[in-house]
Amino acid sequence: MSSSTIVENKPAVPLPVSVALASLLFLEGGLALFFLSAARLFERINPHIPQAAGVVLGIAFIVGGLFVSGALWGGSLARLIGEPSKPAARAGGLAFAGYTLLAGVLLELVFVSLGNFLFNGPIPVHVAFTILFVPSAGLIAGLCARAVAGPLGRGEGNTRLARAVGLAGAAGFLAVNLSMLALGWRVGAPGAAERMTMITVLLTSNAGAALAGGWALGREMTRRAGG
Image (tube, rainbow, N blue to C red; front, side):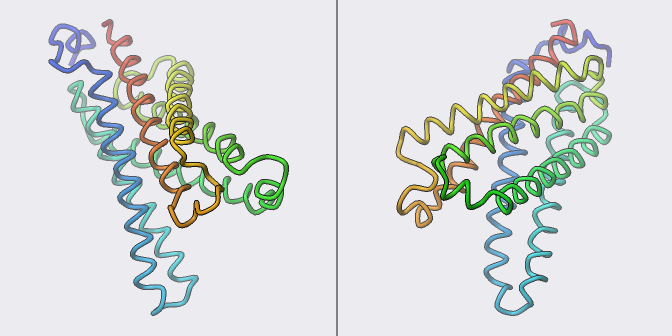
């Protein structure tokens, strides 16, 4: 399909909206589904197998789920603009699983190294959460967008694309995070563990990152097609 096709045959739903919704459905939806499913699976099998084996199985389940989610996302973007879906699906799956796993490992290292300072130091826990997770969400959004840009035929200027999508994703995460805080969902507050506050805020804020980052990616895709 030529680069002008997307402009000549404009869809009923603007491309930025379609990409934002696809990102919310497949990336955030997949992350929430497989994370919560892995937690439930771990609860069920943990009493019957060694703890280390349970952790490995849980991680493998999540990573596999992330790959499927990213592949569905990349493939859906390709279909929106009439490009072959398999290359974009492969790139999306590898990027989403790989970058999310890498971010998780790095954050875990930060928690292990600076846990006492973060949770008992002068910085409130919810502030430390925001400082760590806002850039993480932005980096994942930007890098995943960069990974699928080539297979989508929008590979020129990848650094600019990654920056635009990453900043939008970080802003979306921050906006929802601050909104949740204003509504009383404060990470580290008394009773926060019982309410699963951190998980709730993280998943909800990730939805904001997916929508904002997806919208920015759709805008870039439209611009590069000449629209």
